[in-house]
Image 1 (cartoon, helix red, strand yellow):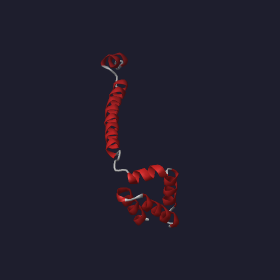
Image 2 (image 1 turned 135 degrees about the vertical axis):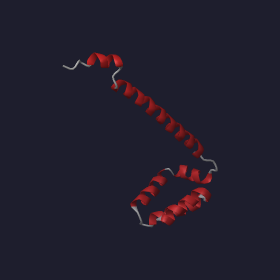
Image 3 (image 1 turned 60 degrees about the vertical axis):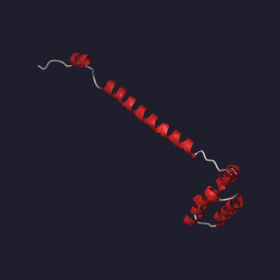
Image 4 (image 1 turned 90 degrees about the horizontal axis):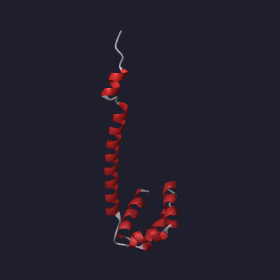
Amino acid sequence: MRRLMLSFGTILHFGQVPTLRRWMASATSAEIDAALQRFVRKRRQDMGAVEGAVTERWSNGPVEGHINRLKILWRQVYRRRRRSVVRSTLTPSRQRRSATVSPAN
C-alpha cells in the first residue's frame, strides 16, 4: 500500500493521464485496504478534476495556505476577545462587590 501511495504522489507531481489510469487499475486490483479502494472510487467520480490536477502546472496551494493563515489569526483574535468578555461578565465590578458583601456579625 505504501508503494501505491508514493506512486500516486509521483503521478500527481510528474505524471500523465495514462499513468494515472494504470495506477487506478492497479490500486483497484490490489485488494490491500478498503480505504484505498474507496479513495480510488471517489477519484473516479470526478475524473475530470483528477486529470486536471495531473496535467495542469498551476496549483491553488499558496492561496489555501494564505486562507489557512488568516483563519488561524481570526481564531486567535476571536478567542482573546471572547476571554475578555467572559472575564468581564464573570468577575464582579467594585460597585457590585461592595453592594453584595454584607458586614460580618
